[in-house]
Image (spheres, rainbow, N blue to C red):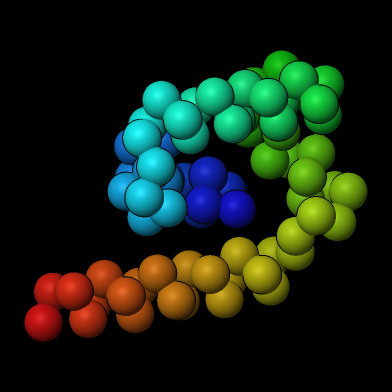
Length: 73
C-alpha cells in the first residue's frame, strides 16, 4: 500500500524499519506471486483483487501525514 502511495522503496523501508534491499526483495516476490511485470502492475493487481481499497489508501495517507507532522514538531 505504501508503494501505491508513490513512496520509494527507501522511504517504505524507513517507515517499516526495513532495509531498502529487503523492501525490494519483498516487492520482487510479490510481483512473482501475482505474475506482475513490475511494481506498478503488482499494485494494480492487488487493488483489483481487493487486497486493499482506495479508502484504505486514503486512511493510510492521512496517518502518514499526521505522523510526519508530529515528527516535525
